Amino acid sequence: MTRSATKRKTILAAGGVLWGSGSKGTTIALVHRTQHGDWALPKGKLKRGETFERAALREVLEETGCDAKLGLYAGLVSYTVRGNPKVVLFWNMDVSRKRPIRPNAEIAEVAWLKPEKALRLMSYSLERKIVRKALQMRQ
Image (cartoon, rainbow, N blue to C red; front, side):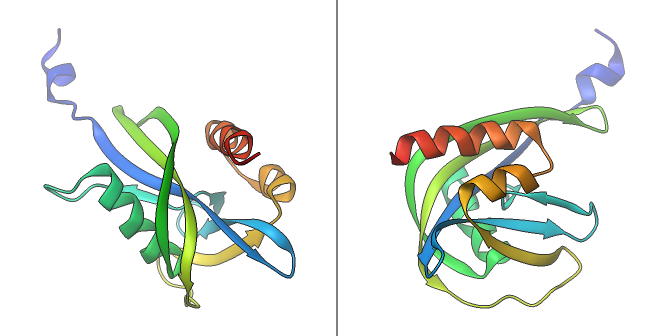
């Protein structure tokens, strides 16, 4: 193994498939990330000593403005970022309190979309698989 390979650290992250309901019926929250210009599920890196579940709830709150109730585990995605492996665990979540969020350096917009529309808008096929699995779990 090369020296550079041994220095690579796995990036640990967590997020949620955040379910809401309202006049549109059942919806999913997607975030439009400012830096990447993409549409994705809310997620982010774990802080030191933080569990995946706590990180998922924190990231959903930070990125969507919503307090959420943790539901069933929805799955994981893995990929590389600048040569480092990244693993993101996702949970189904239900909104317990919704607050508006202002656009900032990280999040330009939060969209609440019907699942079918969310799947069409999402930027990443790996996250679409998570949403499809989450939909099956809710039926």
